Image (cartoon, rainbow, N blue to C red; front, side, top):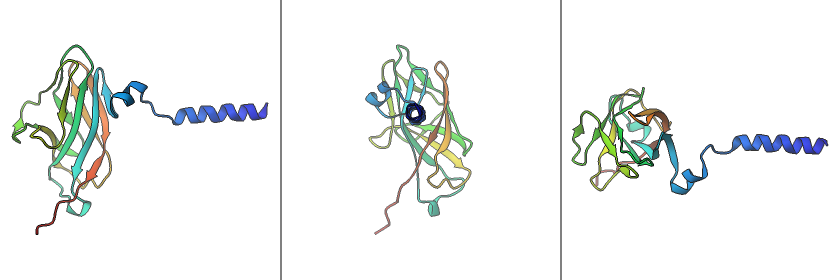
Length: 161
């Protein structure tokens, strides 16, 4: 009886240690955040190494948005307490104001690095971030808002030759 109670207690404790992600989330991509029908995937903020980070500087935030609904969803605001503002830059690098990133019905939008894509940018970062994840809030008028702890990934800049 005592062994059965210990086994049951261990099973309950281990069940609480598991991920809260459902099986569909793992099958379709690593999901960092979800609000309504919108999944936020592969979020990262790129920063130089700690000794090269500057207060007041700008840092890129990359992510991919998936929309599982039959209606388009619009990302119209992004904020964090760690920067003055977050803006959307288009493929040319120009700031798009007001922010309006349209995610088509049953579609996706990549705001990842490269290939002339748009991306998000933290402007006026208020401290050196190191490699600590920071909370960032994403707002979709019809899906809702979600705050995600976004990892800060140090990237090295090549030294001049």
